Image 1 (cartoon, rainbow, N blue to C red):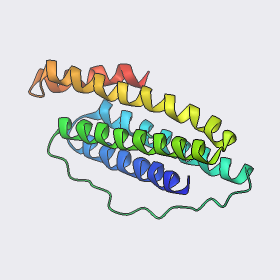
Image 2: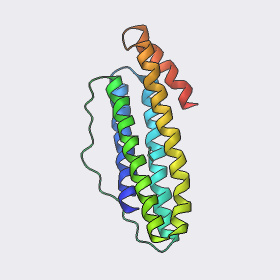
Image 3: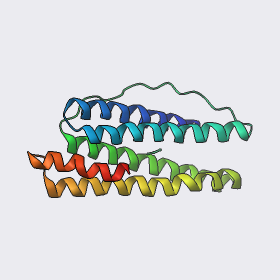
Image 4: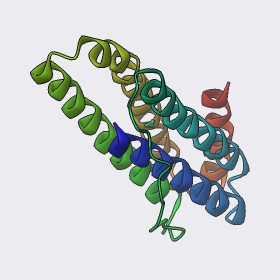
Length: 154
Ligand code: FEO
């Protein structure tokens, strides 16, 4: 769970870097989306942190390094996001398997929320990538991406 705390913190910092990239490249609504995602990831980190506090564990405040700020395009940003979320999903599933091996029912039940949250997060990013594939990223397409991303923020 401490490794997962670190992963969620890394996601939070990565989405903040993506918000910065979006701001600098004219994708202002996408920037808002990533600011919000960044906050959500910190929320995920804190959920696990507090769970460890409540169950007598030893949560560790993570050190975060290697945050990429360099992206080739808005497609690259969202593709990286999906890749990141798929990695997080696998990690959560591995922890659930571990709780089953250990017979730790409390931790298994706690992780249910994360399993379903990952379904929602992956789905959101896939929807955005599907939409970008339709609109393209040139001219009006660029503006349409930002307009559509506004729907996901709601
Ligand atoms: Fe908390 Fe998007 O993984």
